[in-house]
Length: 154
Ligand code: ADP
Image 1: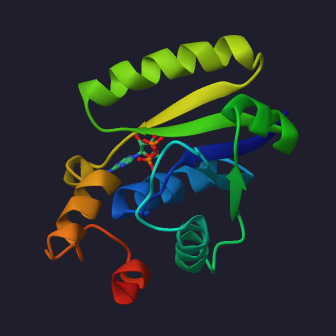
Image 2: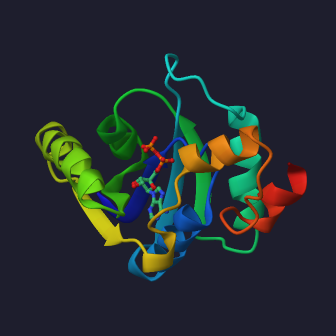
């Protein structure tokens, strides 16, 4: 297993909270692979092509970041990519409780793969993709919550 982190999520759309976690993880890893999970049952606001393009544009000048699409178990994707780490962001106690279950199961399923958590910046605690989608649906201003490249396309 290599010093590569998989950062899994829906990124529907990527927010400044996600961007911050990825940037802070970069000094820790050889590579950070942002992995957009495809879940046929989950309806998304933006297509996977659009979500991928936005992340690629945000990290255009950062060769250590790559974007991939995957389905199935995150640990299987890690094995496929020879990645030793799953990166996740923690905002609140609710995030912790949710992540605890997934992290502990992933540890059983993916022996040798560690989940690493970074605490969000305080100013990013209230930001989530679902809140951003709600505000967009109702015509509100999301410019402080998403990267400029995303905002310019909306
Ligand atoms: P999921 O569908 O798995 O919840 P998301 O795209 O919503 O995927 O989030 C992916 C990861 O980014 C998760 O670890 C989540 O906790 C983290 N994250 C989401 N929003 C923020 C934020 N504002 N600050 C820090 N981490 C965040």
